[in-house]
Amino acid sequence: MAIQATARTGMDPKVKDALDHVRAAAQELHGTISDAAAKRAGATKADLEALAQKAKAVTESAKASIGSQNDAAKKHLTEAISKLEATQKHVAEGLKSSGQAFETSVRKAVADARASVQKVSEAIAAKRSAASTKKPK
Image 1 (cartoon, one colour):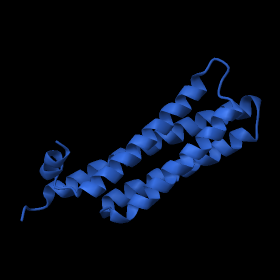
Image 2 (image 1 turned 30 degrees about the vertical axis):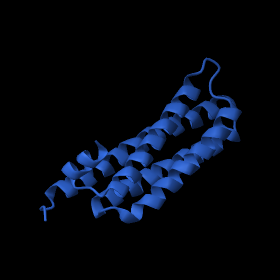
Image 3 (image 1 turned 30 degrees about the horizontal axis):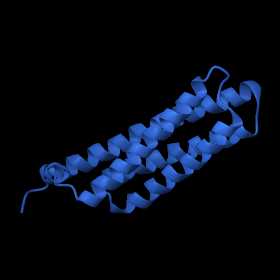
Image 4 (image 1 turned 90 degrees about the horizontal axis):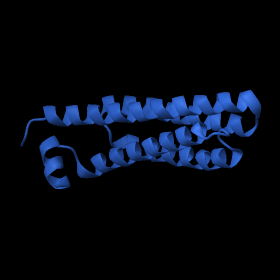
């Protein structure tokens, strides 16, 4: 079924898989940060330490796949990477703070993670759009 979908979109299966992987990882990161922030007692330092590693892994995955993208997809992935790096920054700030500053850092991390998912989705849409406008050989 994946081969048929790829044939319909005209996308290279490796590129499609890379983008789908980055999006799934970014969505998981956003969900995990959101869940941690929604806990009754709020996110804990242990939660943030685990999130820091996830954010770094998603960022590296996005950076690794950027070279195989068209210009529009590269632009969106670059923006996603920027949001992921901001997520990492806010998580790091949260690890160094407490109280209201901690909660603020977690909220900012959630917002940046959400924005990164949106940018990866836009990269996928740009890639699909470019693939659909190519003429079949």
